[in-house]
Length: 148
Image (tube, rainbow, N blue to C red; front, side, top):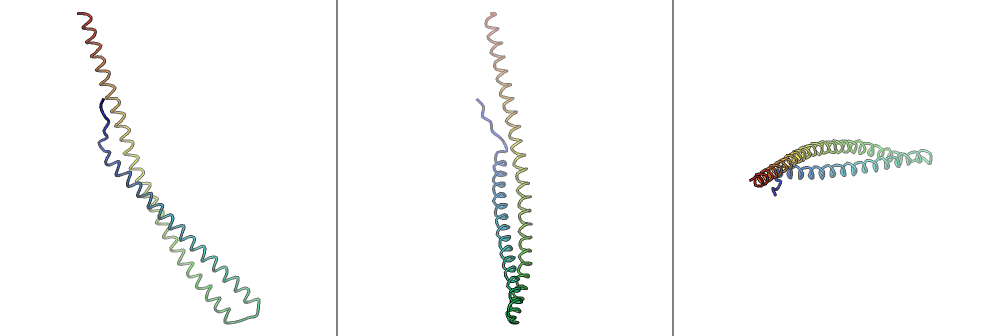
């Protein structure tokens, strides 16, 4: 019996490996985004603590030095939060780029899989045709032998 050989199997294998690599890259970018978002959340919580402390300082005995230090800490946190927001946005862009790349690679792999399926269907039809032809020849030969 004939064996099915897909002529572009090596290309399909490469496309599958590229898809695996794109999945890994997407996963890494996504993990980096989650990490940066967690850092941002921590900074926001720290700023909230400083702001709460500022309210306590104003309501209690007024220590100008403590109030200034606290205000300075709040200002530092605000700038760190802004910087971290930029890092988060950059990580989001990387995730989106990785998602688009993954999508593109998946489409290419699926295209080659469809080509393989079509080639296999053609192969099955050729085998069926050859079998039918062999059966017809056998029947024809048997019929001629019986008539002689």
